[in-house]
Structures are given as structure tokens and as C-alpha cells.
Length: 265
Image (cartoon, rainbow, N blue to C red; front, side, top):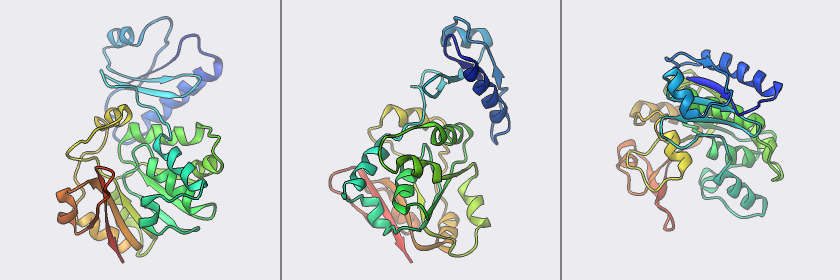
């Protein structure tokens, strides 16, 4: 992996790139060499040729972007979470928050955080004395989420506080659940990468090649039921066999191809 900057970087961007290089080397799952390289006037395509490396982490004034081969750039953005939080601010409902029966002060475990969209809405909903732990096993999505939650600045009331409250951990959820005591969280949530893709945004397309594609195991659900106090919830495409296989009641939504499954305790 190459770490570089935009053209004509300022000193702070050079330092940020150097710090990121050191951080990436310490992440679990990084198997290729990580090299900090000078951008000079080279295009990203030219850097790939010069260093024979298709993966580039770009530090710019606005954000951090990750480029993998011919995939769209991957970067942190609240995306649909911002729309959902705005609705909550306006007193509207959110299907996932209602299904979770979220209350201020709740503790939520997001087992498959990705770029944190659902974790962010949960964090806003549990308010200041609540807690959201977001797990991401794969190094690049973990890094993008961790850095993005720190750096992104939103003008939506309460959004920045919600982002800063999320505790992001790089760990596989099956390992994390085994370590937790009974009834440690009010809600345990899983949003695994769908086996059958539906229409996707470019950000989902970019993260798909980096995500952990392993199906959720029955043992994971057993542990999730032990750790949860109120419910275990899973998101899948509508009519997915995963709901039946893992013992979830499917909650169908007429206006979308996405469905939630719930096991209430």
C-alpha cells in the first residue's frame, strides 16, 4: 500500500500522511508493505506504475481517500446516516431505532460497522449517556471509519457529538462476543455484507472488495443472544434465507429491498 498526499501538500498534510503510515503498519491484517511516497507531480496511475502497487491511501485537505485498483474512491461520509439523523431531529421515526426500542442511555454493539452508518444513527439515538461500540475486522474500513469519525464536521445538531461517542474497535465480532459478559449490551446489531448484492452506491461498491464476506455463524448468534439484554437484530435483503437459517423473525418493509430480522429477549 502506498500512502501519499494531494499535490502541493502543506506541512500538516505531510505529517498526517506520516502518522497514518505508522498507524497502518500496526493494524491487524495488513500483509503488503506500507510505503510513504512523495506525490510530486505524479498522477495516481503513475504512482501505481512506479511502485508496482495498486493500493493508494491519499491524504488531502478535505479527507482521506483509499483507492484500490479500478474501484471508486473509498472515504468516510455520514451518507444516509445524515438523512436519518435529520429525520430524528425533526421528530420523525427511524425503522431500525424503533425496532431496537432505543432509549437514552442504552448500550449498542454494532458487530459489522463498515463505514459506520447505522452505528452513527444508534449513537445519536442513545444520546450523551449511551454508548455504541462499533466492530470492524478489516483494516482499511476500520481505518477509514476511525479517522473519519474524528475528522468529519457536520452542521446537524448533535451529529458531531454522536460521531465522537462511537468506540471503534478492530476485531472480529465472533471473538469480541466471546469476551463479553452476559447482558452487556441492550442491543446487538449485525449488518453482514449481503451474499446477493442489490443496487449499490459507489461507496458500497468500493467497500465490498475490502469487507469480510464470511456469513454470520450460528455460534455468533448464540453468543449475541447471551450478550444482549433486549434484542439481536440483523439487516439483510428482503426474503433472505439467512433469517430462517439463524432464527430471526423477518420484519418486511414494503418500500425497500432491505429487511430487518429480530430475535427479542
